Length: 108
Image (cartoon, rainbow, N blue to C red; front, top):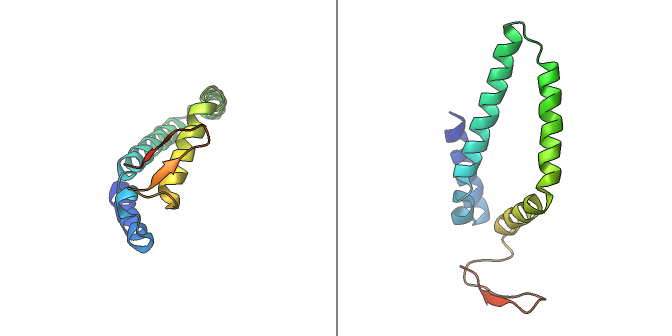
């Protein structure tokens, strides 16, 4: 269900911005992230209904998430920068790009 809503939203945004091809490449990742988040929240709700204290578990997940984010800071920075470039639209397929370090090439 959430997968259909994500696909519809991304298609609609893509038509308005002209970035349909780029945004369609993000659909699979968005569906997976939302499915994992929904599953985790469902498990936490079930555990709470069974009388199991979930506050320590949620706190532990928060601390674990912070530790992972700090450990993967460089990777996450590059990933989010790539998403920003993809969705910004300032660089399109076929553009010729030259970086400060001397690297140059055409965007595929």
